[in-house]
Length: 314
Image (tube, rainbow, N blue to C red):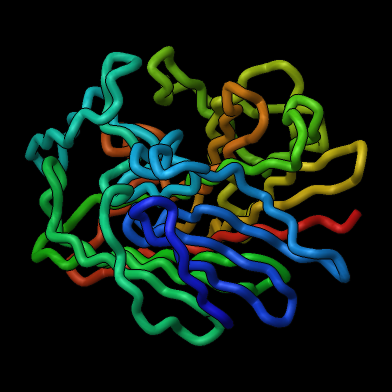
């Protein structure tokens, strides 16, 4: 594997490139190990970029739309930026003022990760040793391992509780995928599972239903999607597919579900309709309050998660 370096304004960008296929991935180590872009080759074709990235230094600084971000120690949001854990109330930073205010997308997006030796099969690893944050006092170590395995891009994430007490934990990844055209004209297929009903504040309202849409390839259409699926727990590896029916070009996002892995997936239509967020998550939105998928790590325990993306054969 080859690692190249460049900058977006003051922000360093690392590119991991597979010399055999030409596929590559770019990551922003000082912006929380955000995945900036992925380009995947297929057969004899040149690599094709599949993410909608942040294009300017200002966007990177502001983490606009959290494109490609690592969401930890919780994904999505904590309603009203308050939660209780084992009898103590915590108040993380209120980072999202809309919808009445939430703690949004965790805390690691602004942190700097360091390069560490990657495990076998991976080409680049980044690590953060954090001492905790406002409203989340538990020290943790987070490792992000990147490589080209399973016929495409693969990312493994490890989160270890370094405190002397139990800690709540969750993780999500926030990529926006594009096929180069309006997503309303693309087909979406979701994994089997339960749709969690959402309140006007975009957190689960307690209702659950079997969603008949997108159980086979179906046009995204004009509807605005901001939906969370609790994946059937008997599914070892869940697949979400996005495909352009005009060209046959497409991609599939996979996430390992078994052994308390990425048990949820969120889909979100960007308002410009030029991309679609497909977000593997270990827990549901507002899990620090509703407990849906929330893990509790013992001191020294590690949560291990795997996800990735492949291009579909035309």
